[in-house]
Length: 378
Image (cartoon, rainbow, N blue to C red; front, side):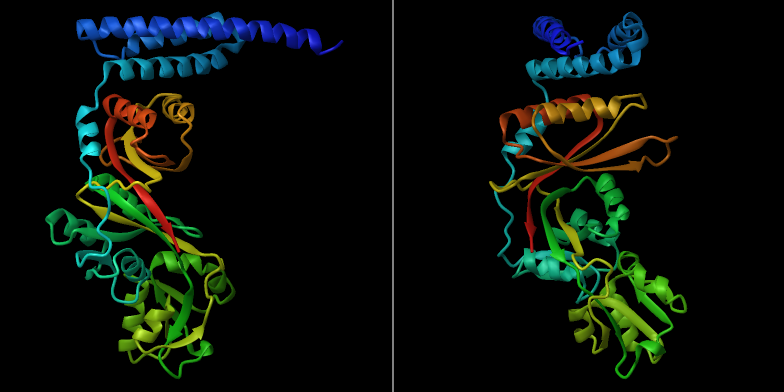
C-alpha cells in the first residue's frame, strides 16, 4: 500500500480544518465585539471547560489529544479577544514613557554586592565606568538600597554557566518587582589564594561564596581532606583570609581580589569549566528601554491546572518569540503554588509583542513586566 492516497486524504482534511479554524476565529471576533459592547470579561472559564470536555468526549480514544488541541485554540481565541478589547493601558503608558538609555557614563551611585574585588565589582565598573560604588554585604541589601533611593542602580549575579541560577536573587526579583535595565555577562576565572608563604599542602579549609565553591567542586572531590566553608562573597573571603593568622586557610576568588588583599595565588584557572561565565543584572526603580534592547523579562502566576503553562507558552511561540529562560519559585504561604520568571528575546516596542504582553498583564495574576534590556557580553 502506498502512502500517497493517505497523504492526499490528510491534505483534504487539513484544508477543511484550516478553513474551519478561520471561521472559528471569526466567531471569536464576534464574541469579542459582544463582550466589549456589554462590558463582559474576556475570560469565561466555565465556558472554556465546557468546550474542552466536549471536545475530549467527542474525540474518543484521542480525547486527551483533542483537549490539548482545543486548549491551544481557546488560548489563541482569548488572545484575539484581549487584543480587540484593548487593556493594559497603564503598562503601555509606562513603556512608552520609559527612559531611552541607561546613563552608563555618568557619576551615579551604584549598589554592588560584596566588597572590592568581587566579580560583581568588575561587572559594576564595566556597566558604569564613572560610578560611585556602595558595597552591600547581602543581595537583600542591594535591593533595599534601590528601593530606599540610596542608590540609582544595583548590580547582582543572577545566573552562572556552571552553577545555574542564583535562586535568592530570583526570589528577591519576584518580591520587589524592580526593573532590569541591563544584563552583563563576564568571564569568571577563579584562583585559589592564601597568605604569602602558604603551600597547597598546608591548606585544610577553603572559603568562598557558595556559587564559587560549586563551580570548583571537581577539585574538592579529589581533595576530600579540605573542608569547604561558605562565605559572604569571593572577595570577602579573600579579605578574611588576608586578615587571619591561620596559614591553613585558602580562598576562592578573582585574581584581582587576591592581589588587592595581598594573597599568594596557589592555583589559577581553578574552576571546573574553563568557559565559566556569570550573568549579572542591573536593577533600578525606573524603567529603561534602549533601542538595542533584545531581551524581555516578566513574571506571573498560573492557576494550578493541567496545561496552563503550556497554553501561555504557545502564545510566545505564535508571536515568534524565543524563550531563553524559565524559572519557577514557590509562593510563600501557599500549598505548592508557583511564580514563573521568564526571559525571551524580543523588543517590547514591536507591535505584536506589546499586544501580547499587555494581554497577559490583564489575564494573568501576579503579573509583572520586569524589563526589556540589552545584554552585554564580555
